[in-house]
Amino acid sequence: MDNAELVQQRRPPAWCFWLSYACFLNQGICYTIVIPTIGAYTESVGGTAAISGLMVGVFCISGGLANIPTAWILLRVRMKTFIVFALVLYVIGNALVALAGWANSLGMLLAGRVVIGLVSMNQVSGSYIARCFEGSDRSERMVLNASASGVGCAIGPALSMLGSVLCASLQMTGELFNQNTVGCWLMAVVSGLLAVVIMLFFTEPPPFPKKEPKEKSAPFFNVRVFVSLAAITRVAIVLSSWETHVEVVAERKWGWSDGAGAAYLSLIYAALIPATMYGKNIAKKMSDAKAMKVLSLACLPFLLLLLNFWSGSALGVVLYTTGSAVMVLLSQLERGFPQSAITKAVAPESQQAALSAFAFVWSFARAIGSSLGTLLYEDISYVAVMLGVGILEICLLAFVDRQGTDNATPVCEPTKVHNERSW
Image 1 (cartoon, rainbow, N blue to C red):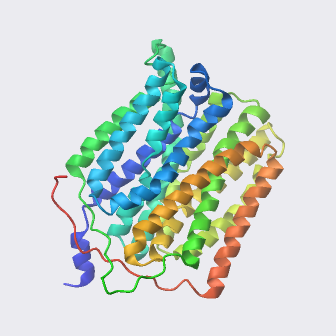
Image 2: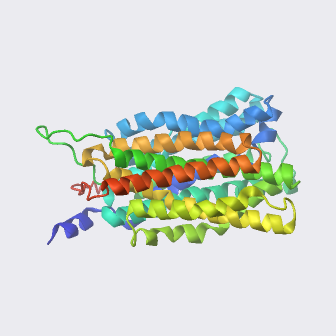
């Protein structure tokens, strides 16, 4: 029996990947489900429009800061234990947000959003894949896993709007259950149920290999790590800035309502779900570096359609929607490749640290992008900045190609898996 067969036998069951995917998806929904109602909710407890933006962005900030301790903990406790603890935090955080209106506490609302963001499932799911898959299989799974972010952006606002309609029809206007809180109560229940499923069915992945005592430590930071981080910075800024800028365009330039703007964003993400799932096939045909370069380059011309020609007219909306859909799709497809590339650019024992750096940069780049989408009110300035970061990424990838650093990378072969169900 060859080594590949041994590794395959020691890999957890296939459903465990989807459990990891579900945890990442749960985080995405928790992040976006408040977007349609957070403005009104924040103002109802004494906040302002500016503070309502903070309520969304603080999720990324707390998650970014927590990525370093998350990496340290994941190397010392079982992943199943960590995930269950994280899901309990989601239950507590969502409950705090939902109770903030009853308590009339802006501080409780902020604290709930901070607690929800404390654990980066981006890093956890990436760690699971890196510990279980190699080579193109890893790239394929990373890209598939990245689609959870887009699916969450489609489901979150849609659930929020559905909850608002339900509350209106049932006249649920109390302090505990209303259109501002029903989404958070729902995600508290979902997170609790998911924690039970993880306890019952999740199988521990094999650990990352440890460096031999006499083995010389390989340098962690190199050109390929830097380029991977630069690539995910570009993807995060483009996606998160579009999510806020499209609200500005829909409400202030097209004259749509808040709900219509949120529905527009949700529908675009929902329509792209089948295509984002296709991204795993790209990993079978291209290296991580080539895929990043091709997808980023293809994205640039469609950004020009976001100049909002004939603003508000039917043709203008169609052109803007086409540019938005293609740009979001290509960026979503690219998202998994930098995460795969960074784990292959470091020594096996440093992969958890690499995933921590990746998740840290992703979180803060999303926070920056969300602010840029609002600050860059004029379409020409917004498009110019997005083109600039895209061209910069392509130049860095081209530089790496010319340096010949896209060579074979260290391979981490799983050696052990805990098959018992206890935790």
